[in-house]
Figure 1 (cartoon, rainbow, N blue to C red):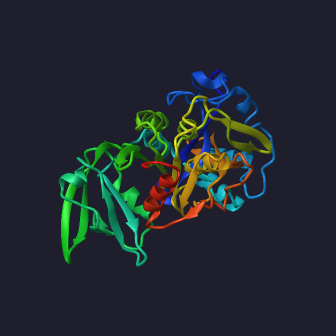
Figure 2 (cartoon, helix red, strand yellow; figure 1 turned 120 degrees about the vertical axis):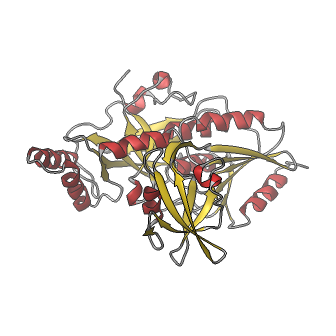
Figure 3 (cartoon, helix red, strand yellow; figure 1 turned 90 degrees about the horizontal axis):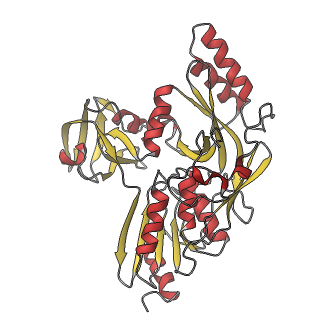
Length: 394
């Protein structure tokens, strides 16, 4: 059934927020007719779910952009020798669509790399502190940054001579990225000294799923994002967990990713059934887990304010269906659906077309998920106590 769209997540423009958002990609896998997605490679959704998605001529909902108006603005601008992307973005901005945006061809191509867990950069994860300073949170092993001796806790002062203090993290990330092999000069603050390091960007690959074991037979599965293959990695980790041992599914800081992968991850703990519903221009559809998941193993899901979108979809399904105890802080609250529209001149507009809900019918957009047990820095220790109360390690 080629040509049907499959529900997934893509990153928003890095310069505008680096948030992974719900949208539809033009691809269907072998599982399209099954009613569930049974493998990481299958990027399809049930035909009944997708039939009629994005009907032409459907009126826009309040707070969303008119697709035809966006296309028309781009076409008129291109015909006059102007930027179709800029004209389309002006229409989107006026519409009040808070998640809508427009990409050029290069930006959109880069997002495909992100969804594969690949990107070109130096291997730094950075965060902005309350006073505006930019600090290194993590350095990817065997990356240009790691080989240059950068480490967590370093302060990033400048990139190629441009001061970054006070900038949004997304802008800093955009400056760090670039073509493979190109140099970038980093100004680093460490222990009161200012260092200058020149590194060369490389094609990097992140491991979205990491697994570690705790005493008492507890397996911690950390999912950094739902990039391609991550769902099957979660399923493998559950299958390889010690018999009778509990699992912590750590979704803290997970900004989302491919919905196919999120559903596959949820399927590791469910035996079929509803994961979420979503609407596209007023027409409701559903997402279902694959059968055969581990429904008996004690499970805690760790969440926080950085748990977004597809990660919230997983959290909501496990919470509503009574499969997991959720521990942490309220999640971000990103529950809207975006659909990409190719534009004249090669740009792509990502426009909001609907929202999704948990199995119990809760809308997450703007409100997020309140965990069953509140916990901040001590969330993992509290999760261990919960698992202990469920008989793990006793």
